[in-house]
Amino acid sequence: MLDAVLERIDRGLEESIGRWSALLSIPSVSTDPAYADDARRAAQWLVTSLQEIGFEIGIRETAGHPVVLGHHPGPGGDAPHLLYYGHYDVQPADPLDLWDSGPFEPTLLDGPHGRRMVARGAVDDKGQLMMWVEALRAWHAEHGTLPVAVTVLVEGEEEVGSRNLHPFLEAHREELGADVCVVSDTTMWDIDTPGLTYMLRGLLYTEITCHGPGRDLHSGFYGGAVANPLNALAHILGQLHDDHGRVRIPGFYDDVRPLTDADRERLEELPHSDAELIEQTGVPALDGEKGYSTLEQVWSRPTAEVNGIIGGYTGEGAKTVIPAKASASQGMRATTAR
Image 1 (tube, rainbow, N blue to C red):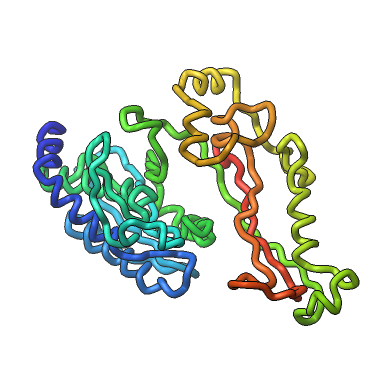
Image 2: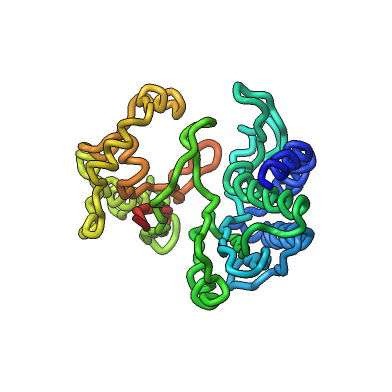
């Protein structure tokens, strides 16, 4: 049965790429309200696609972007029940001048391992999502049903912290019951080595704002006498980490479980190279929490990163201003499942 499905997938590869490209062309940027209609359009596109292969599925509203939720009965009887999770939203494409092609104009390029797709969301998460959608499509086309009962949940707010996902899960707890949940928003080690993800680092995203004078002031008149919110904010952010790369927030590590010796042994078996990572990222050297390998730092250790600072004058030229306020966006990540 499987061989016939795989052959169908191979025969229909170009059509699958076409459907993937259609979804990629929708600019479903979740963080920007200007793209709200596009986010809903992406959700509806998935509803239509899954209806074509026998799903009873529709859009479910949340306080933010909608969720796509639906079911396929499969063969019936005591067949296993799988829940597939993915997300249709994407990150902003800025800075646009760094793109060689339009971020929402899917482009296939030749690479060392064959063709690769270039577009915003191609691998996070519309690529993984469409992989299982197309697998389900091929099986349904070949056999007229699916081998298992399937529930599909695709959200539109993963890139902004999934703020409405938890209440949605609680409200639909019974409907989402399944034997296994397959999360598609994960990675492989390389093109030939699949990865088995058993923990993820969740995100807490915050904004810190320092308020100073009641209005912007001229630094020539008031500099030295009035506290500058940008200076104050930089001082606060500069104290986030100690000299060993550890986060200084009280209690930050209280619930952190270190990797086991067996975990570390498996990490050491991977052909990781710090030198290659330095080359890939363009940094002069790696820097992080001391006492842990690079793979531990990026996979299992909690982090606190400053993601952006806004304040004062940021245009061309100079404007000698003490701003009335300064803000920073800051994200903290920690392992959420073991």
